[in-house]
Length: 423
Image (cartoon, rainbow, N blue to C red; front, side, top):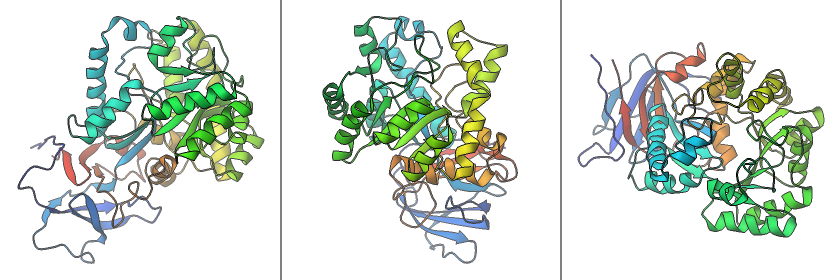
């Protein structure tokens, strides 16, 4: 027998106190797993966590026995793009009406939450700012969204779609800026539009035709103008940076996280470590790039060529940073196209383990460290008293088999059960 249901809001009459118990619990702090663990939820927050028999369960609590499963904090993907697209070709975004893309993006929100991702950081999507409001108000089911809105790019940079007109590129979702003053203006524009953080591009990339992943973009002065504006109002700055020089320029300019970092060198790693900059390696794309050699879908030749160039470098850069002690957060860079479908975002911590990270560290990258990267570690990321009740259960022991993170059978977000699919 299989029981499944989906729910975003707590219905009238649902118990105000819920006790979840399972044969194993990983609290996301890095502590050893708890055998026969219990999480007590009151309202939208966690009131206690511990071993069954040592945690008081109130008499009026509804007890949900998750059996042989493992309880974890809700997963966090620190690098997504919720765009509503289903192809690599730009035609998918041009031919389909914007309203249709929005509906597909709403579908992706559902897929993310069902897969156990209770929080995501969207690193570039105009749609995501509206999806954030819709999920907050319970209009659509979905994860908690922290959104950058439009990406800030130099003219001809990674965020500037090179093969269409400038006006069309801006409509697609970028802010173009050149020179420190213009970069300061663009940062203010992004903040005006409601950005939770600012996303910039300080190197070329795999997905941009007329540049290269290792070529720096923006000067240090331009980067600093953006970070000053963001930090003045308590916001963070993330940078798309694949080559070492662009990574180092970004860190010197004051960014808070480096996304991708495929071609790091020792100096770049040392700078990340000394400045406490987070590294979001998007290592799930390693498997995407490998698979696309066999089946390229609608990827253009120039993209395939650049993807092949990254395959050997990506795991080396990640392990260099990991062994040095850089803070690593999990971010898939999935956006809805084949091989990068939302709902499969646990590919990121799974691939982290494949290339050499310890399973517990990969789990922390997708929970505690991801929350720290976003700046919300006081609210989410671990199962601790007083934090929001974002709780999932998976079939199996993820410390023994990290792919258990893709076998999600229970999802609670903010104290409300969203998905309950137990057999």
